[in-house]
Image (cartoon, rainbow, N blue to C red; front, side):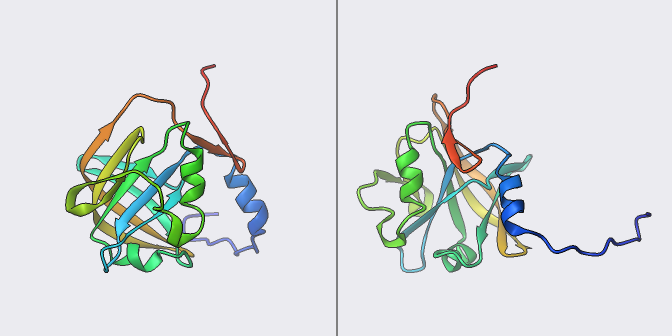
Length: 168
């Protein structure tokens, strides 16, 4: 097969594919922004990763069918809140009922009023630089304007379960 040959697409067993992807350990984040009406919106995401150090770029993706897809499609800024080991309940809350996600959550305003979750082990305030089609997801690339990090153990996600890292 050479570079010009295209393999015939095979049907994908989406459940098996999701299970295989779950074999990759990820961190857990909550991505936040402000909707057009000024209310804070956010969701739990494990698709976050770095892209570039110079300029400082990060990316994440959102399901096109998600509750806040339109808010993130339109946003000029977003924040990535990296959750620590003790924030499993916060992760679940931001994966739960959309209108209740910020109830009883301690936040502080970031640049432009972006909601930053208190107690996270890191956060990144970003300007949306690029949006890319990613099939059933939209990929957002942000340029980091400001960030902060704190000591603590990260919250991990693996094979459908939360965990924490241990040294080998």
